[in-house]
Amino acid sequence: MSRLNGGMTLTHPTPAEPLKIGTRGSPLALAQAHETRRRLMAAFDLPKAAFEIVVIKTTGDDRTLIDADRPLKEIGNKGLFTKEIEEAMLDRSIDIAVHSMKDMPVEQPDGLVLDTYLPREDPRDAFVSLKYNSIADLPQGAVVGTSSLRRKAQLLNHRPDLTIVEFRGNVQTRLKKLGDGVAEATFLAQAGLNRMNMDDVPATAIPTEAMLNAVAQGAIGIERRTDDARVEQMLAAIHDTPTGQRLAAERAFLGALDGSCETPIAGLATLDGDTLHLRGEILRTDGSEALDDKISGPIADGAALGRTLAERLLARAGDGFFDWK
Image 1 (cartoon, rainbow, N blue to C red):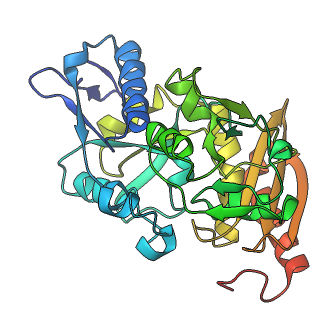
Image 2: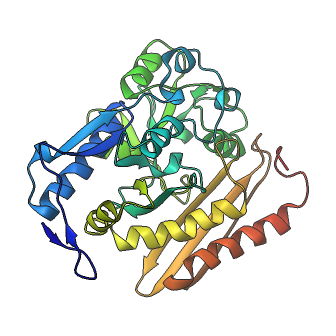
Image 3: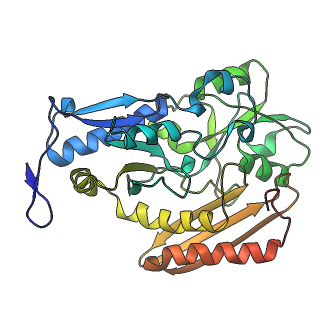
């Protein structure tokens, strides 16, 4: 046991009554859940058995949808990888949920809050190919696989000669597709490769100056119920403040743009002393136009900076820039 703020006693989870950690079942999702468990174990000197990892299948994990390589917008974007997990938390089947933040909608369901972040990994995209080392090396008309509208738009903005095909699945599935000749290259998040220690994957990190990453890419978020004071206090012990400060700006930027998986939006915040720097980019879905801008200011003003940057870009874009506008 330990003390909550105000002197209340915090009852730790035990092997008999473990804290239940909800997650998707992919190798990367499990790696992120295991990292969360390790940090909680260390923070409170608890055994592994005091935590139970509960795998929940989401709509986005349906193999019949993934293997069909249908565009994500046909399946349902917002909540695609979170809906069932959040429902389990609301009905108290699990206590917390571990998410890849780039998959998370800006708004949470009533009764849930997302305010704990683990230290951010490398936010960059990784170029993956069995034949080539970079986008520049791809021959005229090469086929590139990606299900990300952002990556597709960015790629076509620089290389309109390329052919883009739908391309999803875990790392092993994507490498097999490359080997089968479905495409000559694809992209993965460098953070995922790092977290799974997959140094053997033929991947090259792409500088953010060349291909700006998705908002919150590389960050792990932990969602909880708003009425669970014990979990709130436990998660506070493992929250990484700098990551939270960066994501406050990035997600405010995304929210002001009404962003989802259907919209080509990129953004990255960095910290330098007491100053936050934010760069953002929006693109037409066909890659025919890209607009980018940047802003800096006090870290405490991160969310306001994100909204301001979004307003600047929307003003430049005008009506009709996005298909959904």
